[in-house]
Each structure stands twice: as C-alpha cells, then as structure tokens.
Image (cartoon, rainbow, N blue to C red):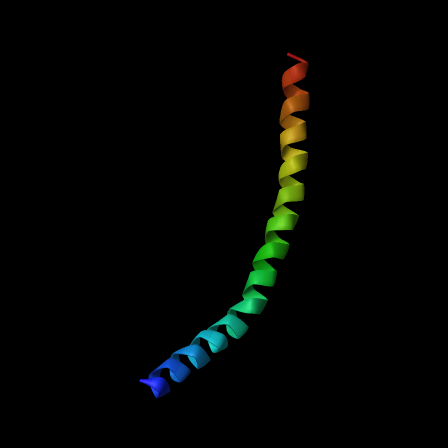
Length: 51
C-alpha cells in the first residue's frame, strides 16, 4: 500500500513537471491572442459607430 502511494505521488509529480512548460506556452498564446482580439473588437466597434 505504501509503495503504491509513493509510486502514485512520483507519477503525479512527473506529470506536473512535464505539463509545466505546456502551461506556460498556453498562457503565452492566450495573452498574444488576447491582444489581437482587443484590436479586432476595437475595429468592430469603431466601424459600427460610423453607421
């Protein structure tokens, strides 16, 4: 039982270490797309005001 708990903890830690860089990449993509989205929304709002 104790060995299984240790193995489970080691696997969980390994997965967390492997996924850490992916979470940073995802965060970076979200920030970049968020800024692009802001420009897109501003252009839509700006275009709608002139009508």
